[in-house]
Length: 360
Image 1 (cartoon, one colour):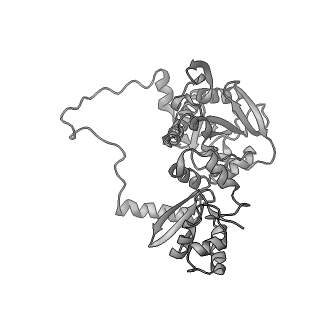
Image 2: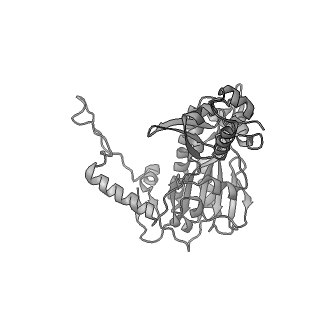
Image 3: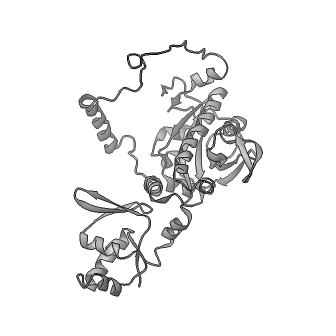
């Protein structure tokens, strides 16, 4: 049997220990210098006999086998039977190690759940930190910093689009007795993702034009909508086609609740619907090989979400965003697992419960 080290690993020094993490597996292990030297010798496919020769007999073949087994379990070392995901990463992820480590290591973050011991400890830590190391000021001033400061009258935010912008707030108590109409649902989706027209741009051809900016015009996002209280529409997960302005039923079976996907935030289950923004990295990678393309996609999610939320506000209901997505649970509901597609943001939408507190 032959072995090689995974390409999806990075190495750090923590507390005087060598730590290696396979970010595709989200597993980390500390290794000895002896084990590290063995890993370095496995850039290409090698067998135990070859490793023993490279290491000049400093490690017995029996010890090499034991070390390799430990490293295979953590995904640091691969066999031909366990290399599939790593090969797919090498062939399809164009943005390199830094962006890959950031993205994949965070895909299935274990979030603190409400009312858990971990959340209570976190709240205590913040309370203590507020006393010992107060928060930095959450705004900045020009006064007393610059010699010339030009002051202006605050605009009238009670007219036109500004009235809607002013009304934008997050809530966490939705009215479960009040459904959202299909027209209002699709209006919000169109505001965020709808394609207004196509324009021929050389040499790339027909490019989609939307109401939100998109880096290089690559339009990397699709929306999947988990409908739970939409007038006349069966519950289920739907895909929104931005060019057809249509909903396609993806899954109407036993799907996880929105809260199960979004860090057990139980208030989300009261929403009439949840929009999941799913990035298709291939669309942006095709044009931009530099990992700054990844950053542009994350920023674009905010553009889209803001339009969706403002449209909801204009129609009389609310949108509350969250980035606390457990990707594996969403992929299970979407019935698709693709390394270059990922849900990065979600917006819960619905009418506010009477007297619901408005948050930031």
